[in-house]
Amino acid sequence: MDSIFAALISFFLVDPIQAELAERLSAAQAPQEIVSVIAGCTQGAIPSVVDRVAGDPVRALSQVYEVWIGASDPVRLLAEVAPDCSAALEAARPFLAEPEA
Image (cartoon, rainbow, N blue to C red):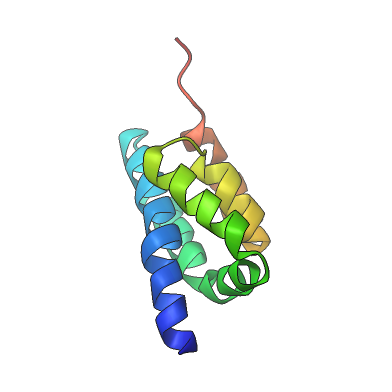
């Protein structure tokens, strides 16, 4: 049962965050090493994300919805749900900055 729950969390929350970050890093022409570190970090964070979601499922559903509609910044959300990814996010920060208009 836990593996099914983890797979659902991965599919609906972690994978969309990872895809959004990969797309932004690719568009910013970030080095492949940074893209790989972010991908590894998000996949490695699944157990801690599952624990957080199990502790507050209503908030998790809200976050899933916000990611899916594009209303939530995936960088902020990843930093919140997976604090162990802070070093990877810090390395990627220059490439994830929003372009100035």
